[in-house]
Length: 271
Image 1: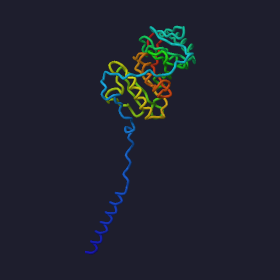
Image 2: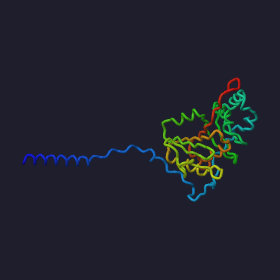
Image 3: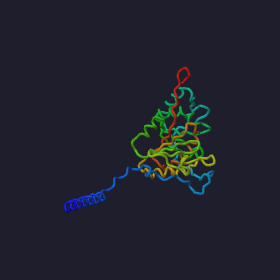
């Protein structure tokens, strides 16, 4: 009986040793969770704030450049300085491009001009290498330098292997704030990050959301405003003030404006 008893003792000792070894092994590290790195949802400025109330927002930006050439729009035409260019005439748009070559241009958002209507002029400025500023419609002393990007250039920018890539998508129902790791949620996670309130854009909350994303991605030195193509230029100009935390103090060192390139027309007038 001694041999079987000795064997059972050795087996018991081996089992105890295995259990002790298992307890000392460190558990495998869980995979990284990108969601945990995302900023917290952007709640209203005041938890008791009613949906129709808009917090006041000062107009922040830069002093317009004194030597800039003024560009304005009216009824399908662009006026650069004292010269008028029909935006539906390819020759006129090419002349506008030549006139704006490497110039500093101050774009005045007037009347009911929409981004899609201004697209031929924006493409001409982009191709001309012009330095573009957009003037605030309510305060002529404030303007915003922007880097023009068409949709293809914007996609290349997004695909760069860098963190951040902050962009504000401007729609009729508000702003969607997006980054490489997804959307910054608003008070309503199923709605836009910064919803309109009483039919008005909430620039104060937009400014606060962009500041939060800059804090989250401190090395991100550029951001983009991406308006829907049916957005009025005046609304674009008002939204740009949300990219400044104070007068002369931009949240990001560079802001790009994404515009649609016009669909080229065939000689017979078709597409």
